[in-house]
Length: 212
Image (cartoon, rainbow, N blue to C red; front, side, top):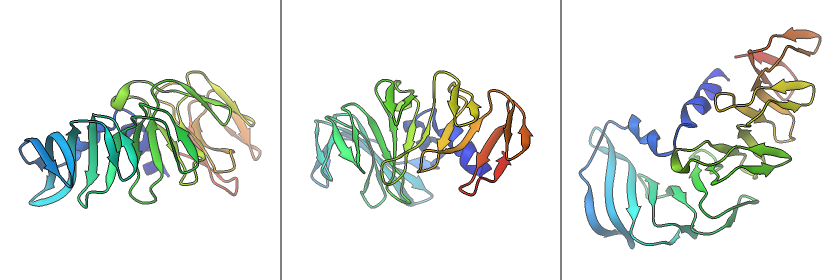
């Protein structure tokens, strides 16, 4: 579980910055058309000699895999499956309606969505931080569109637990909306045990608590 927490803390700083882990790139190809998509520029991310991702900047807005993409950055897997885009208009994905200008990234494992909203937004009763473009603060969803991870401006009460707000304090929910993880804003007693303010806790679906 610690790996999951660390991963989310690292990625909130920017969708595009994730490419920094690649070992190398090809040179930019300018004004090219590949797979019937017109790019201002395009290059391939490499691991040795193997292509592991494709990065491009679209010349014009258009549909890719039925997603309305803005004329902006797009990322693809090595097999040309869309991985990152900015929406040119609102769209329902996995039962949730994302607004125009949302940055969308699809997780390869289950095609669930990680999103940077253009502005703050209320989801399932919680104010989730947005803004910042591709390098903004991310909100994560389950494959069925339920809220999974988000960041709050203020400390937030979920059940009996007061969770820290702020950009360094991720809040996670189970699919039923119950608390999955957060950093404690004050001491909390859970299942008869006291957990101290500042500890980051993970609560599994059986109610077992771990300190991460």
